[in-house]
Structure formats: structure tokens, C-alpha cells
Image (tube, rainbow, N blue to C red; front, side, top):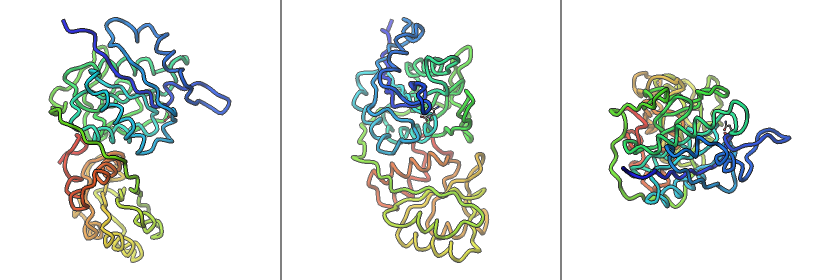
Length: 338
Ligand code: ASN
């Protein structure tokens, strides 16, 4: 019989380890570790051993930046040979961005990385943190999971497919264009056919994550100055949340001029849809013409979070713009359906 599995728990911040303060919930050093030690179920023999490492500073995830994604990825890579799996405890607000980024950064890890958190802190009445952590630890101990997942409530989702869908519900995350990888009910079930079968490979993390990527949601009447700013130096990449299948106001000469100027600077543009469900199909409508002429890549059914994280990671890996464009349309971490 194999021994008890060891899971590295990186506590990055978020509600799960917060305490009520005079200005609202805030992370407090040492609190999460002591809560875990006081929770008998999390220390049971049939639960993997949890080795908790607390980040400094602990963040409300509203403060997370791409450099923080890299910090978490580095920590996991450093410990990749000493642990069976990893749990990242993170705030829910930007968890989908971090889970997406980790999915791209940790291609080749070949071990489970489970991102989770809670809506109510551990230790507070009706906390969902204990259940989320317990489920995550059990999924992180599985041999058949070799990818980044986001576990929350009863959902087990591919990390690069998840979006936060509820500010207050316990089932706070969904994956709009992909069925969940599994569910945590009476049993924890995983859809074996949908799990990624990735070979372990060396991981060369970028030295830094380039945050010079902008994200812009189109809206009726948007001033061209906004698009111009989103394409100005030092920006290298832009995610456009366009309408429907990827349409753009091609009747506005100022917007067209701003887009054309960005194209001249060889900015890599990824187009995702404002619709939660469905996919971008550049060329389906004549109004996507300016995007196509600007060299924009249709993000297919990628979430905005995944498209942004993917562009940040690819540009930071130092590929030339043409390679980034080609990779954007490929499935690198389960983020899109080709
Ligand atoms: N504001 C918190 C965070 O994202 C929300 C949470 O974790 N539920 O850090």
C-alpha cells in the first residue's frame, strides 16, 4: 500500500484565511495555519498530509498581479519533486485569472495543482472553506489529475476554463464553454475522458511576467481615445472583448484609425466574446473586417481571463508577435476548443 500523500498548500491570500477587522475582512498572518490545525477533518489519517506555506504579503486577490502568478508558479516548480500535489489558496475575485495563468505557466508539470478559496473565512460560522479545502486536497492527491484545476463548491473545473460567476454563492465558479471535469457530491467523480494526459516535461518559467497587456470591452459609443490608449506604448498585447461572434464598430472612422495604428505597431490582438457562451468566429460578419485587417486572432471559446493570462505568458516567453499569434489559436492548456 502506498503511504499517505503529501500536498503542498500555498496560501496566497483571500477570504479563506481572513478575519473580520474594523474595515472588513482582511488576511491575517498565521490565522489560516492555526484554523487548519484546529479542524480535525483536515488532519484525519485518510486525508493527505497538508504542508502549509504562507505567502508574504497575504493578498486580497484584487491586488494580485501577473508577478504574483509567477511567484506561485515558481514555488510549485521548486517543490515539484517533493510533493504529490499542490493546493493554491487564493481569493475568489481574481482566482480565474490566476488559475488560467498557472495552467499556461505550469504546462509540463504533470501533477495536480488545485486552486481554491472560499466565500466565508475558515473559522466563521457556515464557512465553505473547510469543504473546499478538503475536496481540493483529495483531488490534489489523485494520480489521474495532472493539470491545473479550480475546485469550488461541487465544481471541479479546468483551471483555464473557469470564471467567477457569483459574488455571494457557494457555487461561485463555472466554465461556460466546457463541461466541468468533475463534481464533488457524495462521491468525488472525475470525467476521465476529459482529463488532460500531459507528459512531465522540464519547465522554463519566464524571468518576469510582462504586464504590458491591455484588456478592453467594446461598448456602443466607446470613444476612440480609449482604444488608442489600450494600444499605446508600452502595450504589446491587447485582449478585445468584442460583441457576439467578434464584431466591431466598423462605421466609426476614429476607431478604425486607432486600430490601424495599433496594427502598425505590431500589437498582438486577441478577440474574445462578451457573450459567456459560444465562440468567436472572425469573418462571420463583415463588421469583423477591421479586426482581421489588424491581424487580430479570434480567441474561439476562450474566456477573457484565459485570453489575458495566455497573452501575458506568451509575450513574456519572448516569442515574436507572429509566433504569439499562432500560439493564441492553439490549445495549450485546455483553454479552447480548436
Ligand atoms: N475579496 C476576496 C478575494 O478575492 C474575495 C474572496 O476570496 N471570496 O481575495
